[in-house]
Length: 230
Image 1 (cartoon, rainbow, N blue to C red):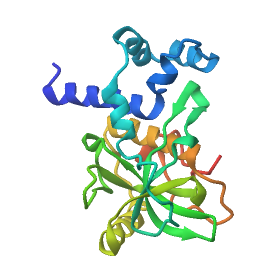
Image 2 (tube, rainbow, N blue to C red; image 1 turned 30 degrees about the vertical axis):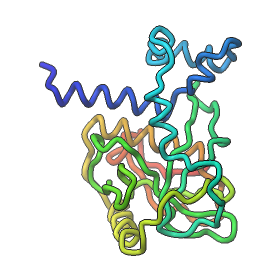
Image 3 (cartoon, helix red, strand yellow; image 1 turned 60 degrees about the vertical axis):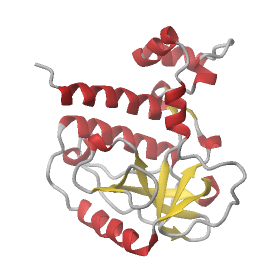
Image 4 (spheres, helix red, strand yellow; image 1 turned 180 degrees about the vertical axis):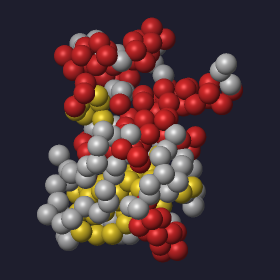
């Protein structure tokens, strides 16, 4: 029997997939449909439903809410700040998927051209161990188990600075996450797998070690593996 929680979980999972994996309305509803869009539609029931239902303003509002206004000044990112990866980095990628840029929390600088970040999500229904509710004015959670390098030039303006105390809490949880052995619920595994695929698309190649080993217990990925930038 389907419970109200199961129903909410499925609805949120569909929305999470659309916000991370599906093209925006201006691409999906373009009069001249690209080959990438046609291939995506062959595999995505959610977007076929969107075509039947018409443009979804709520979805585009959700995916743009963490994008900074164009008139905000660009500054060098610093630890403790929230930035969104620039819209210009979005695009088609592996698996007929359209990659939409996430917001991230800067954890540390990496030389002069990169930063290590933790990804941010607005889908708290999938929160589990080592997910922290954001402090400050932005709703959502920071995935302390999920850190990776990003090129400084790929970050937009600062959206908010959460301060050193919250940053230290995130860093402490990230260290604990590397030793996590508990197995997440099935839907959390699916969600975390999708989040890691997002990171692989937007991350930068790095000559320094990438902290953290993610195993099938933690993410649902097959076998033990270290994430590597594409």
